[in-house]
Length: 178
Image 1 (tube, one colour):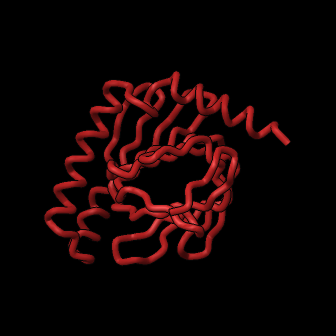
Image 2 (image 1 turned 30 degrees about the vertical axis):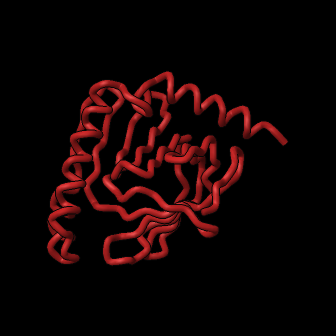
């Protein structure tokens, strides 16, 4: 398995359960890798949708992926505070091409004032039936929603302002290094 180093740029590819490519982020800067996790940053990163539409991310965002949790976390750094977008997804894999995961539709959005919203439950139900998510996958995803909400409620990891500040400052240091 390829392990990118701090300051490297990688692509991220999100797939759906049926194997179809869903979305690609072209250049994510790696801030840290460990045996189990990868932390990176997107800042005006080119995103390509499965239908070919392309757009740039609007603000810096710290991204967190883990090999044992069925979610990934995007901490979007905005003037009004940090907003989070959390994807319920398979643990990531990485190869020479990209960091890859399966997006399982359910999302949790956290607003700067702390409000949480579970999004896309209808899409999850539709895809679960269409693509025959197993009972085991459904159980794992629902367990991981609980883990994710616990992290949010307790300011664990990416949900800590100190975490966001640490990794954003590291990004600023690396991006000015030539």
